[in-house]
Amino acid sequence: MLTPEIERLAQTPKLLVALDFDGTLAPLVDVPSDSRMTPAAREAIDRLAALPQTHVALVSGRMLGDLRLVSEAAPDSAILLAGSHGAEFDLPPGHAPIVARVPSGQVAVRTREVETALAGLDGVWVEHKPFGFVVHTRLANEDNTELAGEILDRFASEHLAGWRARGGHDVSEFSERAEGKDGAVRALRAAVHATAVLFAGDDETDEDALAALAPNDVGVRVGSGVTSASVRVADAHEMAEVLAQLADARTNFRSA
Ligand SMILES: [Mg+2]
Image (cartoon, rainbow, N blue to C red; front, top):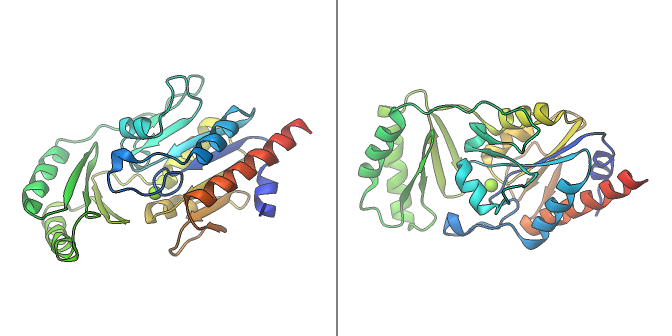
């Protein structure tokens, strides 16, 4: 099902393919460090990244080191990485670096406090991030999930004024920085001088980037949920098919 949009996108002079990782390239799993992209997604992005005038970026809420690990990026990989929703970047040699931000001392303090507040709730755990924290409830029962939500709401209103809150699939993230994936895509687009962008994501945080795309870009929403994307696919497996189609069309266009 090669859509006209993918066909058209394949013919842009300089293409940026910017992709969320979890739920988009990698099926969602219970243990975040176990997350890996599907073999078909891996093959498609490696093919795209090897094409001339074609750049692939992973744009994730994960911190950079963590994203590097789960994406199994080779040290000499041509893939651009944006972590922490675009507060951290790792670009291959040849690209001007995008300046990283420095977290304040508040992050560690608030993360410890929230851990204490949620201690004892089975299945609820707190992930430390450079600019904040994420509360995970995927392994918690309904009661503990609800209780965690109430505790978090209270904690946020008392201690996290000015922080950005983001919801997602069984996660609540709080960050002292407001950077979103829209800013990440903007910075990556400029870094590679892209003439068009494909962005794909499966979660609320991806909608920041999807809503900010230009008319000749293509947005893909993976799974259900309200979206500004023009293309929707069911899951990471279908997403890999779209990427393979884009790689085919781009290869044909480049060799025509
Ligand atoms: Mg995701």
